[in-house]
Image (cartoon, rainbow, N blue to C red; front, side):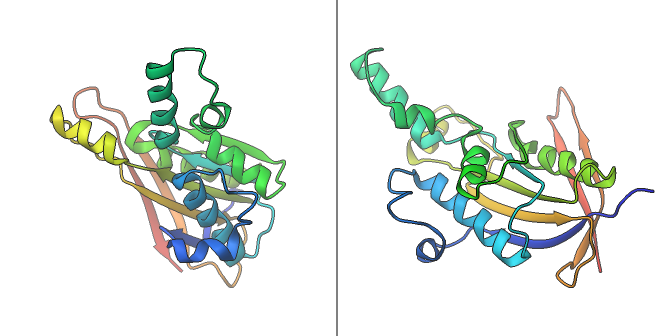
Length: 208
């Protein structure tokens, strides 16, 4: 028998005024804009859900931590390969966010990152949905995190590139248990790949 998958907490684009409530300023002083926002979104979802240690932490990101990537590449272009910027390098990879959430919360469970352009989040949701359905896990924190820097926006405008990727941080806690905090259930997740029209995804919910 397959499990139902309930949504028990959602957090979308926290404000900077909330950071002090969730972050240790000493531990996070070197974190970039996206890392702080992503971490606070995840921690807030964890707090609302009451699930301190989800069985899985999954993040969907199309661009990764682009601000740190820009800093690293700019330094490399100016100073050459001898440049020493370990922090920007470590925080520029796509799997940085999911790893950071896991380390910050001391979570040793399943930790995964999906980077599939505009369907990155839905790909992560499908992973969590299938695992909960099959009883592999009971809870999952799934996030969507991307940032559009001013430099990236300017370059995209110059070449006439229009992107569907949003600057956002979103976190959702999923559970196989219908607790008093559950307010909708996932009915289906559909992802389609089209070589001409591009990828598309849809998450179908029903309210409880």
